[in-house]
Amino acid sequence: MTKTKKHAGDTESLVYQCRLPLSTHTLNYLTDLLRRHLKAIRSRWRALPPGRIAVIVLAVLRHDQRLADMAGGNDISATTVRRWRDELITLLAAKAPRLDRALKKIAKRGGEVVLIDGTLIPTQRRTGKANRPNYSGKHHRYGLHVLALTDERGRMIWISAARPGRTHDITAARRDHILAHLRASGLGALADLGFLGLDDDGDDPVVVTGFKATRARRLTPAEKEANRVLAAGRVPVERGFAHLKNWRILTKLRTDPASATHLFRALLVLTNIEATNDN
Image (cartoon, rainbow, N blue to C red):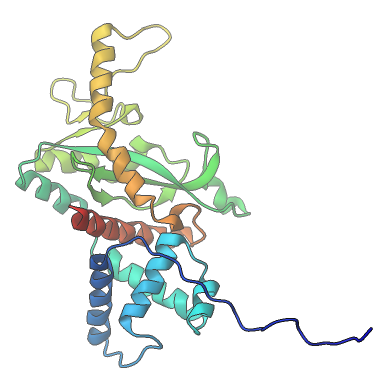
């Protein structure tokens, strides 16, 4: 028997190709955004051209690729990939619409109602008391709560700041002054029973939430039918969240919760670009 310390094969890293299910319009938008930013800050050199940087960042966001894996496949460091990711997220988040402007734009187009809902974005469980507010008793998991508004077709027009997972929908809506913004723009909103009590104007409500049964009172046939009609009208908002969650980085956030708001708003911009290209 002969002993040898040589490896049986090549020790070089293996690299594979992966399809990125995004349009070239999205890639070109992100590349142009980065080029304008580099010109504005007078950055003359990057390790890779803007187009390659955009592809790497989109792969991280869409497929939740690990930074070290993307770095090894492009002969750069994981720190560089992280810096590029955070840089482009900040640039995209700055393009996200404000709540008042988004509602005024819907009203200007002749829209009458928007759809509102909240969701929980799962996060990794962290130790310490600071992470306890992120636990949602409703979903029995840790995460961050966000509100979103969509138009009647389900196109997402605004997303709120990230809040601890235990935040209730109606609490988040009050902090963002949703009701005041809706009245100022002359729009109504369709919402689920989680927003029951947000609008206490019984004669002319701006937020329609349907009817809720209690132990002492059952719903009438007319109220049940109204709830079914409302549920059918709210289907597009669920589709809007589904499009947003196609970005697999949201499957289980590993980023700092403090920077999650920028990430959500950046993904909102990218989601709308993809939706525009599909139409």
